Length: 295
Image (cartoon, rainbow, N blue to C red; front, side):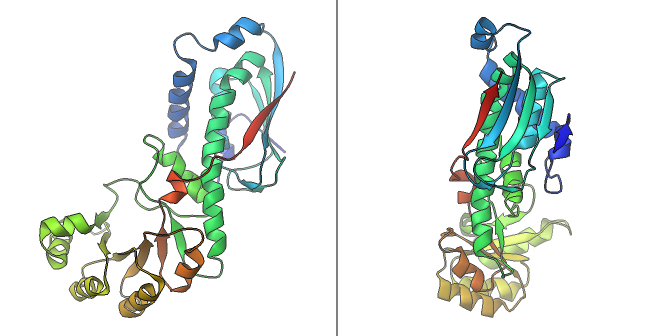
């Protein structure tokens, strides 16, 4: 058991979520929930000096993410609140596992409850779904990636949750890397033309990825020698195998489209390097987590 007064001590794995991001996100969430007058229910019914003890509990098995945000939520309303952590982000938990014990002013505990649970429920849902994908790829080189299909304003958090589940992050934004899609190719005129334009302007640290729908398009990309990564979009398993053989390690291969948990094991066996799925963030079920009050 670890006693903490800082969310940083709960960060896992490897950080990838800055403390200012945690604090700012929590401030926005509390402002949204408390509104103009604060928690009028708790103010009206709970004496100011009343203490409370609460335990955050996982009501299902899965992988936890978002505890640093829960801690920050309680601390912003009561800086001296005492919190004991019984789990870390990225850890698998069983149903009934205690995650945090919070001891402090009852008003602050009750006012922070929903925001704290929302963070842990949403992010743990993403981490748990990601872990189910990762489990299906065991023994292969495939890495599971998220996409930019995230909740507006919560991208950094949701991509962090993917990492907690054992996945990897694709681009955080449009400025991370060049990803040429079918509409870019249509406007530019051809695969060769668009790759030449991209390579002429990018810096030496910027990767260039291009999306293809057919093996003929892949052949054209390979002939240019200008792409770092090729995104194989909505290809069936036999075609993916052909693509891997055709590329022969000359470019990194990523799969997108139809990347479901039921299909991911087959995709992994084709020998591609990455598979990206928007479902990790846009379709993850909420993780069932609760706060039990002990006054």
